[in-house]
Amino acid sequence: MLAKNNVQLITYVDRFGGSTLDELNTLLTKDLKGLFGGVHLLPFYYPIDGADAGFDPIDHTSVDNRLGRWADISQMGEKLEIMADMIVNHMSAQSKPFTDVLAHGKASQYWPLFLTRDSVFDDENSPDIDKVFRPRPTKFFSDFTLKDGTEVPFWTTFTSNQIDIDVESKQGKDYLESILTVFSQNNIKLIRLDAAGYAIKKAGTNCFMLEQTFEFIQALSERASELGLECLVEIHSHYQTQIEIAKRCDAVYDFALPPLILHTLFTRDASALKKWLAISPRNCYTVLDTHDGIGIVDVGASDGKPGLLNNDEIDNLVETIHQNSLGESRKATGNAASNVDLYQVNCTFYDSLGRDDMSYLVARAIQFFCPGIPQVYYAGFLACENDIELLKKTKVGRDINRPYINKEEFDRRLKFPIVKALTSLIRFRNNDVFTGDFICSANNNSLIMRWTKETDHAQLTVDLENLDAKIELNQNNKIQYMQLSSLMRSFENKV
Image (cartoon, rainbow, N blue to C red; front, side):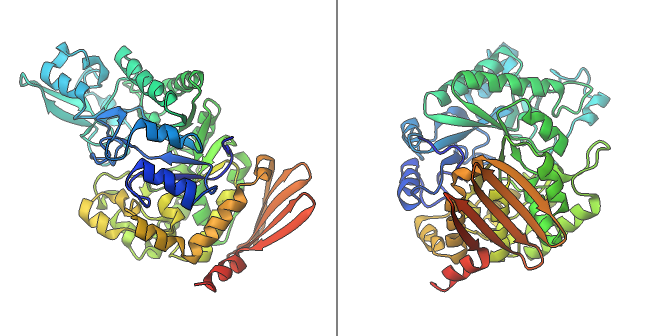
């Protein structure tokens, strides 16, 4: 029986103590046995080393043979709940369908699969083009020359190697169906709908999270359900949009949580976090860090609607992250590095807190007590520092938080007091009481989060003044207490 509500891991197959699916499976079922109830395998499709770390697949239904085979994923899915990315918005410019388009133009059977500027806009100078929401500083059209010499501006929301798909075309629908079918045949239970908010493009709109986009997500989720799959929708947007999306799909990310927890710890004020937890979707997955950066748009204002934080609070949040990381995050954020999103700060979560073990442990405790299924990114699990050398090598901002960890380094980090303490906290969170009822309260000095299931309860009391926390667990009429500072000291003394 898979543990649905237990903490899950997010990781690349080849960056977490090994280089293959078989090695990762061994690590999760032996070295970390019983720790994680599931694992989000970041793109393992061919190739894993494209322009966007696997998010630009040449073949979305093929496992990169450097990692293993579908059989390895199916085997892993026998003991762990597997989540895989479904990249609905685009595919690689090197894919067979797109290279066929370049060779044969409109005569290609795949021509309707891809979006061009002219398939959406009547005129290359249309004022509607300026209305399109841009997630990155690059152009959203890239010119490609067909074999006959014709130059065509194809839609490329993210990079020029990621050609946007017309998901409303028959070819687009067939393509997505082929991915769902392969997933359902190989023990994948959860699908992360990547970049789904950009999937529908309509002239006269901003081409982001339109009503038609909601309908597309809902229809795709319903089809996935027919095949025994659940969908997690990945959208960075205003918090009210997130609430609306949650009503029409299986699950959403709580992307407002990471900046709100940082704000709480930086200011010692939990009022904004408390406000959010009173209205946040319950069918969510919680994260502090992912392969992307720390989202900011999720707590900001949008189209005249106030955010969960005001502009001054957001500015202070971002600047504090830069200061805590000794300026390293500044080098990886915004226009400072290529292939980055404009709405996030690129930094490991550990560095965003100045590598302070207690602050980091308190942040994780808050995450684990929030409603939703918690996910822990591999770099966060191992309390990794910013990978400046990788950033210098690739000049890709998000690579600062995408380190390659070999087995030797993995074993070394498992011995860190903060990693041992976090491991203890994860094992505590894998408790059935967290499927009960949740309440939250806060005052000037503390944040109290409590779960109750029948006669059992678990309570987290955060001391905001001293950045410490106490956990109380009452289960089967037995009460246990855990002080996070004492937990940290117990492992520090063993070093």
